[in-house]
Image (cartoon, rainbow over the protein chains, first blue to last red):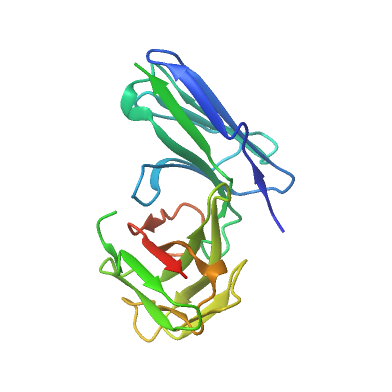
Length: 111
Length: 114
């Protein structure tokens, strides 16, 4: 089946630093989504990407939909303590809203 | 996560017991789905529905049943709980299956099978 690869499993950064996360797949997706999950909560959508090459920002977050449609990255600039959480990429082929998720990256931000 | 409500939030079951996780949405969404989340595994699709009366299997459907008698509700049934079903379950909904529809998640149901 389709798989999305996110690595490393955990990242540790200093407050104020920028961080970049990649998500890759051997399959093509038509939509890429980035979610953040905090403890005890469901995933919350951060950014949605609908076109190959698309670059979208949401505050300090920027994400891009890869030209090949097999990858995406998420950048967080000037990190703050509340950026702590698990960041998931997810892909959709557009069929029935079924999402394939990566395993997530746990981000820790040191004050 | 407003609009997608899951109950219960926490549940402990004994092996072999049955139970139903409830999911309701008030956004008139066509599409609803259930995911399970296990440590280091991301979220995996169990079952989904594209509308009332229509359901289909996802990636990990074994041991679970669903039904969709109304647009609003999409319950997930565990017929005979097993320890391997210990997980966090998330219900999700969206307007439709075409590109660009945002998927909204509930807050999760923590299930432990002993």
